[in-house]
Image 1 (cartoon, rainbow, N blue to C red):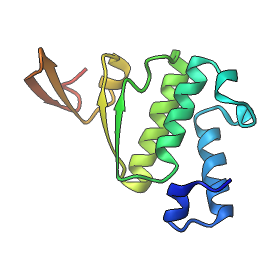
Image 2: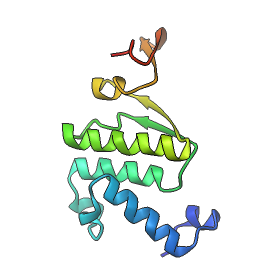
Image 3: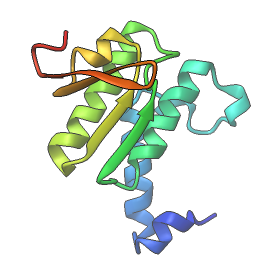
Length: 127
């Protein structure tokens, strides 16, 4: 089966496969690659969603609670993968989160209360 988005980007089959396998490994679910979604745990599905979002090397990723269903180790793995994407491909990540683990790694934090911007903080000041 071809993946239309990757096909539109004119990515060769071998490169598509390499990207998919690399990202599955990066988020720690490569051993689950032959399973259907209903055979995965909530955390595995969350990590798979991250891999799907990153496989096309997008310029911008909007992530709503990217670590919500993950334990500490897997949340760190996902955040590390996103940092590598930022550093390697220049991907910008915008997170909506309540997770202090995510907030502590942000370069800029915008805090909202009742739909209003109440503060903007730069790295180091956000923790």
